[in-house]
Length: 193
Figure 1 (cartoon, rainbow, N blue to C red):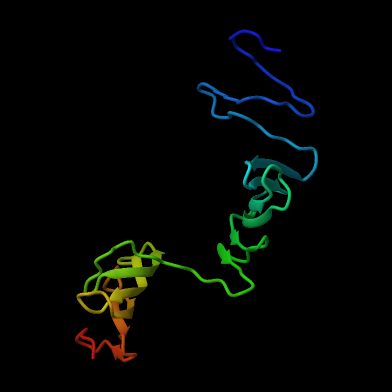
Figure 2: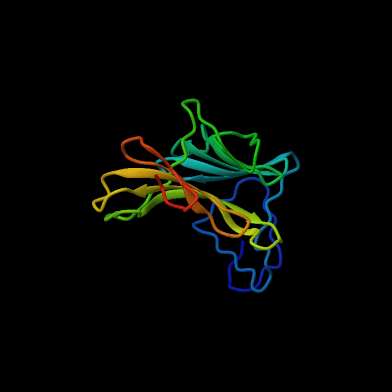
């Protein structure tokens, strides 16, 4: 038992310890706490009366599990994993690429605009393909895809594709699919037709 305020240089707990709360202040030391297991998995359950989650270290990978039972750490399901190579898996424990989303019903990526007054050419969402090439005009968003508002009320939308020539570090619109499904290509003048 610790009965008075003071400095505790170390504390070893084996088994279960029940406390009202735990505050750890490491001062100027960056490592505040270390959780270690003698097997390949370290589990830190987070439990409340409604549900539970877990943070796990598994063979050098980091995993987050959610959806567990209230009052216990049972029945959590792994939702996200960062593997030892830095690949992030959402819905998969074996990500194939830097970001890999997986779902039995088909993975959908949502890019959402919080703008409540979308106007003509206002961006709803987009993807930039960015280059760090060291040559002249080699660094920048060299290719992009944008979902934009096509009219002033934002009720019609279009999808644009931009590319860049060697003389530019930024992408310029090269193709547009409008709200009616028409495809417009950029002519030599840079205008869409």
